[in-house]
Image (cartoon, rainbow, N blue to C red; front, side):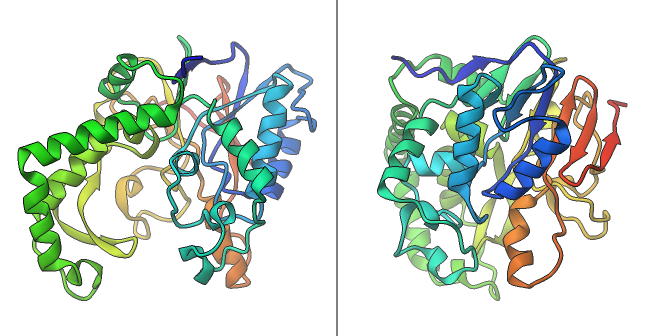
Length: 345
């Protein structure tokens, strides 16, 4: 059966839950606040939507995925794929997913303390994730993990394969071939050899390595699966240090160019309630409960609950909460019962 990257969104009142990252207790609390039972039934016939990043970093990704799977089997939930689920499908060891891949893993030295997956868990989780779409949409609303990018969606429409991994690999191979044939790869390798140590040293900024940067940009933007799950990127004005290395690409605030009338709900971007002076990155000037973008019709429902492992490690109260956007009511409800009315103005 051909993989369907886009599926039709429920025609019902929706509760759209942000990135969970293995925080099973937060999910259970939020579902209770929203009025759902353990099978996802709601007295007002509402439906649950999950924007991806169910797993990694938190204490029990297995339990979160199992619960979402159960809710979907009862017909009461839909879920899209986030970049963290994609990493499991493409066998990519990244920070926070040591629970799935086991040791040795970079997580061995980090304070995640997550429930480990058995071989049986690994198999059913991969089977479940492999059927998740990248996009849910209707005439009223669009759901994607990181970026609504029409060019990427049009690229996906041209490819029909049995699995998402086949599609992902197809675009990886075509991009690698172009990078090799264009000569970018050869010059990027020379840059890498010259600055290998410096690229990991936060105390010394390397020069802007244009071939390395151009190769990275092509690998991101010519793979529509990457674009939808981890966002659009552009060449940075200068190298910056993040995630343990110097980077040459910046995230693109794609919503500033999104001109369609249909609203989009995303996760991925670690939204929070800090003051503008404390914030960095794309959300520095965006209020925590605002729709944003060119037409004020994009909303991020990720409120950074994935950082709770740091709170546990430092033995401090939780500073971030799991939330759901009620649509079309335009209300945000948090796991502790706080409720905020918002508008599109």
